[in-house]
Amino acid sequence: MAALSDRCVLLLPNSEGEWDVEAITTPETTELCSTPLEGNTDIPVKLIQYVKNTQEVVVVDDCQTALPVIGQYLSQHQPKSVLGLPILSQAKLIGILYLENRSTSGVFTRDRLYVLNFLCTQAAISLENARLY
Image (tube, rainbow, N blue to C red; front, side):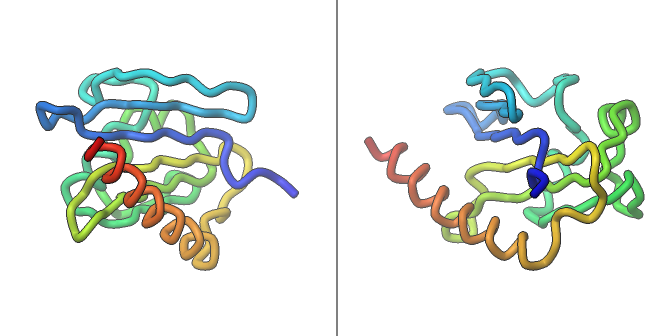
């Protein structure tokens, strides 16, 4: 079975309220970092900003969408499937998960989104608990 995504990015707000890329993982590597979202060329900033501002799940196949999320990164890399998933805790945005699949269109199905939303709910609890300590 093919992997759901080729790339996964976790974004979290820092103590000043600015958003940072905290981790990027691929099947080969995991990179822990803390680089600003703004001006970042390694992720689709326009899509992430949209998720951040609307707190809505965004799924795009073959870079075809009416949403204003296709920026330089997506135009250049042309992934087949992308997902921007807000991580919410008590209706408050505490993180964003970005997934992309570069070889297969339509991988982020309703059933998979259901599971991913459940996992993000659990991650939100863990993130909130970690911030308390």
